[in-house]
Picture (cartoon, rainbow over the protein chains, first blue to last red):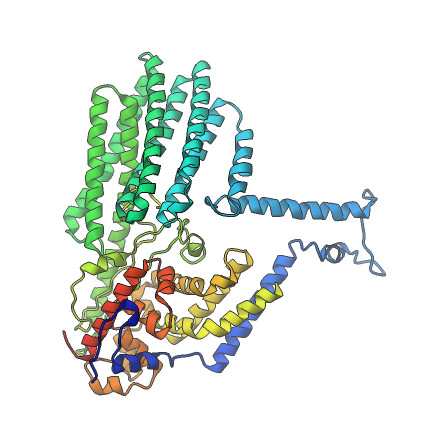
Length: 452
Length: 171
């Protein structure tokens, strides 16, 4: 046997004759000509069927023909276009059809633009048209402020997505700073309006929500900074700093608002909300810690992920401790923000742990089934699953939407990042079968922001 | 549109076999691999007709869709329901193993070869398969798996090392 394997570079490994032979044989597996032809014909029919259903929706070119077919009177002796008597002008009918087509096209563009990011073709539609329309149709100071908060948060989400997909160059930090500054001023203006209308508690709530959202995204950006390549760290730091400055100015606005309030039932309500959030996050932490204690160290397939879960639990506990300090000195809104943050992160950990627990349970049942059923004493085939995580912004379906974001939405670390820690033992072994569960598409080991 | 259809059907002619092999590598079941490969193309066409992807980027997208369909299948039916068990292999009268030197060198069937490659544990096995059987480049594999090129290179290197040990019966 020729064992002449030399490593040159990853792309130029010199393979042994055995390996080359093996790979060459592997390529022999193919569809039979009949299978291939059947598949081709099936695909062709599918494409044509889809084409027909798309055309039926409004192909302008064949619009008149479709119109003829759809409203032809079954009692007509000859083919003729029947138009209701109140429509005198045939051209008006065609114009209406054209208008509907243009409207649906525009609506489709607007809808498609919603998921666009800076640098995309449809992004200007999102910011200049969709968001402007949203602002125009927000009536009242509260609605205007909430829309502005939502749009500011969208800017931050876009930035995080660009960072996660290694497109930090597409982030224009000057524009982002300007956008966030303008939005913050707009929010502050409407909050002041709310205060003038005697709705200071609502103003504080909106301000707290804004601050809370920015804190969450700042944390996400900080996490991304840790893993970022060196050449992008400066750019990401710049973004993080400008988010922090927005948080500081928003905190100032909120504190000023709180300063104008007198002790009242409204303050008591904030305190009650803070305590309720504290209870919620503490319960989630208790569950997470209990699970870790009862199942042992290996929660997930990788030690790195385990460590991250532990670290995140510790971070949440520290946040709760800080919140308790604020609660004790009467800074109820600060406490509420901290507890809300802790609660969101604890929810994320809770879901992560529950999902991992389910996988472990199913892994155990598969192992015990195999041990009971197997009577082989020969070498076992170890079945492992390649678990590329889905790159997807929306994680609703791995098959239908997983490609669009690649996401998307985020580049979630796959469970394979933990593989470097695995022992370098040989694959062949005696039963039981070892199965590595797939990584969860929605779980990020680094960030506590769900979905990223 | 007709041009797009023709190009897509041409893509089927080009990639149906590689994708079928890829699916077989994952599930070790010929019929299932065929079904998954076919579904990959129908899903890709559905996305293309909505404008979600372009014909130029179809290769990587097809592999990604195929990979995701495999994962969905695992989740739906459980690992044991999808992948071949030892018993099934024995029924086929076939038991590939690096321990049996003669059988390794007497492989004449692509299925057997793929099953042997499957003994390289993932993610190394997958990377080696995609590189040396499917003929994908490292950047392509990186795009498909959403990993860095460096990670893929390392995996290929380690996978080849594991393969060398398997051939040499090293533990």
